[in-house]
Length: 199
Image 1 (cartoon, rainbow, N blue to C red):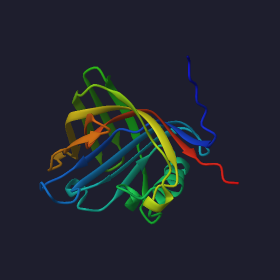
Image 2 (image 1 turned 135 degrees about the vertical axis):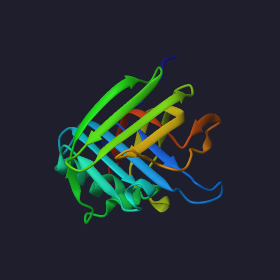
Image 3 (image 1 turned 135 degrees about the horizontal axis):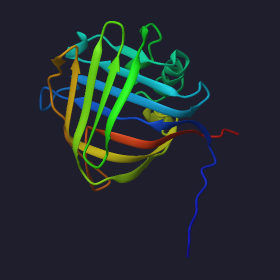
């Protein structure tokens, strides 16, 4: 028997969201956070935005975007309402710098992204992918997650981040997600965020 399911919530954003969470110490907190968005649908239109914080930014969070309205929408709609681990990017005092985005490769082998602003050249790469899987997360307001989301995940065993030629320190951590081998970095494609309908 064929089963079907239609989420009753409101779609607020859909696109791709490659990410990296790098660690310098085995039992320490994240040293570098990277969240890159290529959005195809949102209330603020389409476009791209990169949120990054780590040793290559001097520990200061930075935002690069080709649609500032979209960058702010991601901050106020997603980061402000879904805290871990990227909630620090919800701060609207972080400057959003105009940038151009260029992508090469695909999930069969590698993906490289170049983000160029007037002052910075950011290079990001993901490679050596594990088998893909479809994942979903339900809203959990008590745990700091007010939205649900779905995505096609390609966990990456290898990543590289460089800003103006300086390569970020740290490494990915292996993870298990419902028994599936995963990593703290990879591609999240067809990522769709849902706001639950409240009565």
